[in-house]
Amino acid sequence: MKIADLHTHTHLCKHASGPPEAFLAAALARGESWFGVSDHCPWPDGYDSMSRMDCSEFPRYREIVRNLQRRAEGTPLKVLYGIEMDYVPDRMDSVKRNLEQEDFDYIIGSIHYVKEFAFDNPDLIGEWQKPGMAEQVWNVYLDEMKEFVTSCDFQILGHPDLPKKFGYRPVESESFLKRFSEIFDAAASKGIVIELNTAGLHVPAGEIYPSKTLLKLAKRAGLKLSYGSDAHSPEAVGRDFDAAAALAQECGFSGFTTFEKRHLIDLPF
Image 1 (tube, rainbow, N blue to C red):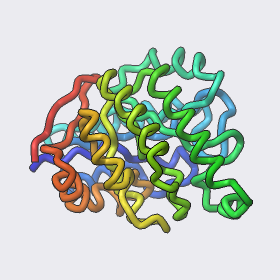
Image 2 (image 1 turned 135 degrees about the vertical axis):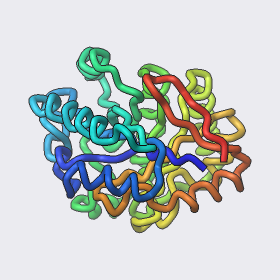
Image 3 (image 1 turned 180 degrees about the horizontal axis):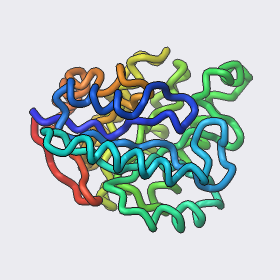
Image 4 (image 1 turned 120 degrees about the vertical axis):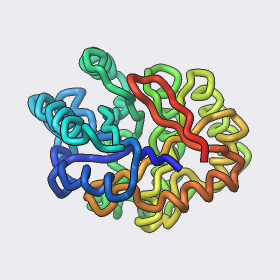
């Protein structure tokens, strides 16, 4: 079975550890066939500067990936050039303008903020305990995800239910599931795939992103899957792929996907 881990980071994001060469060595040791580097996009300029590279560091990021690609030559592993793009309402023009100049293999679209709240930041977990905060976060998150999917170009919808990270799950009401179904339908119509992200197994939520319920909705919408460890250290590269594959099969999927030059490649189990 070929393995494609499309969601990994570098030290440039300020919250990952280990040299890029160690990540590559871990991917080779795992027997991966594709290893995607997808660090956090630095644009718009100044956005979330404590958790991502500065715009001036982007050439360094590009060179890190190119160096890994050179190092992987002659091995069974192909290194892919990706990036994780956030949705920043009313500021996506500069993101698009800068990213369209790059020959990415793929772009992951993710949301880490609701208004000014970095809801997945462990340093801010106390904010979740404010009255009504969980409901507010989930409502705004779903609104923005729908706008993101319909208005922006990317290939992979990253960790779709990330706000559950600290255990603040939504009530899976009919209305909630309907909103997610609409997002998945829109994504499917644009050829976007959904990420099965195993990092959720190692946080208080204790489950893969997305949940089994949402993954079944994604299958019903006709979405395909990509695999991501969301590795911020070499030890996390390719982690829990067996669990991800088992969940995917349980929900009716027949395999995963990878991308080269934004061209989708099917990878059956």
